Length: 337
Image (cartoon, rainbow, N blue to C red):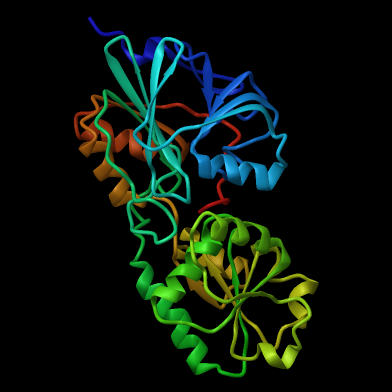
């Protein structure tokens, strides 16, 4: 007789705890043993005694926090079975950013999958999402409302390139998050045939270098610092969202303020951020992919966390799936959106 995951997975102040493994998944506070789904700072924090993650996630954590971010680290390849005390742990691609993983936990004849953040659209900078059958599926819900249906990334990149052609004397300044979105946008521009230099705010350079060290080619990327204002006319410059409206941006020639985010589907948010060209490019699953994944896992029970939990719980109930909200705290809305 199997032991239901509700008996060995529990929400604690530190985060989601797996008792048979003696480990937390993406804990928000330092713990003895942590399993990390991906490198965004709301999921991957320093100070844990031991960390299990993909090699890419461990590398990202070292870049962000220094080599001593944990006392002990263990890299797991996708599909590799890890015996973790009384549980078996296997990581599968989540398609969110480089190294991102879903966590399959098997114990007592039952299994649960913790999705972490995920998307199902193709991304040239990371392994694609892999569906994993399970008894309990623990899903994110960042864009868990029916209004969120993300367009193909190709159409958004085309919007950026068309705008550049229309305004050849202006610089296009795109707000992107440093990890994942920045590198994906560059790779998508290259895939669309854009071969000019892409200029970067200094805060983006380290992680772009890390991506290239992990085998992701980004082409000609250059620091924007020190480049003459006139030489940036007609160019694309990437910067953290906070830098697109501060003093740093004043050095640019009549910039077109842009932002690449799933939240750009909400016009009020784009207007609030003074975005002239919103680009709906998301690294999370939209409503259709969230609901499709819930069904395709074959899970008899859905647990929903960090996002629009109520709508997905209601949807699951309407479609004959038992569901509940975990209400985990400490996960940010914006990073990696």
